[in-house]
Length: 271
Image (cartoon, rainbow, N blue to C red):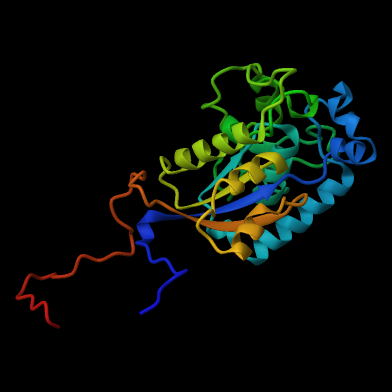
C-alpha cells in the first residue's frame, strides 16, 4: 500500500501553534516609502499605526469566530511594542470588565495607541520570549525597551524569563544573517517542546517567522515548501502542527488516550 506523503503520529507527540505576524507598525509605513528609514532612530521599538489597530480588531474578530480563545492555552509574544500590542489586542480580555478585579494586559494609551485599557479577564496567560524577536542588528525599530518600561505598560504579561532589564541582544552591526535567524527559529521550536501547553499562539515578526518556517518542510512536496516560504502579511495568522519525532517532549501520554483492560481480563491479540 502506498502511503507516500502521509504521516501518522501519536497525538501526544503533536502541538498546534498559531503563528501571527504583528499588525502594521509606523516603521512599515516609512520603510515602504524609503527602505533606509528602517535604520532611523525615529522608529525605535515601533508601535502600531491606526490602520494596524484596525487590523488587530479584525484579527480579534477572526480569533473569536474560530473559537481560538477557547483553545489557546498560552500566548507567546516577542517583547516589542508592536508585537505586544497585537497580541493583547487579538487574544486579550474585554475592554470593560464590568467592575471585575483583573490586572490589565495593557494600560490605556500604551505605546501611543489611543486605545482603552485591555483586561486580562478570561484571557490565556501571556509570556514574553526573546527567542522570537525580529532579526537583530542595524534597525532601531527592532531594539527593545527595558523590561521595567514594558511592565508598566503591560502589567499582566509575564516577563520573568527575560534575563536582563535592558536590551543586550541587539547590536548596531552586524545584522543577523538569514542562517542565524533560521537557527534561532529551530531553537525556539525545540524550546516550545519543553512547555506543557498543547495549543499556543505566537506573535512575532516577518523575518523571524520566515526564518523559522524556512527551516522546516525540506521533506515535503514542492507546493508545501512554497507555502512555508511565503512571508506573512501584517496581522496574518497561520496555524501549524509541529510533531516531535525525536522524543524531545516531556508529555508521557495524551489525555484522550485510555489504557484499556479496566477491569483486567483475558486479552486475545487476534480480536
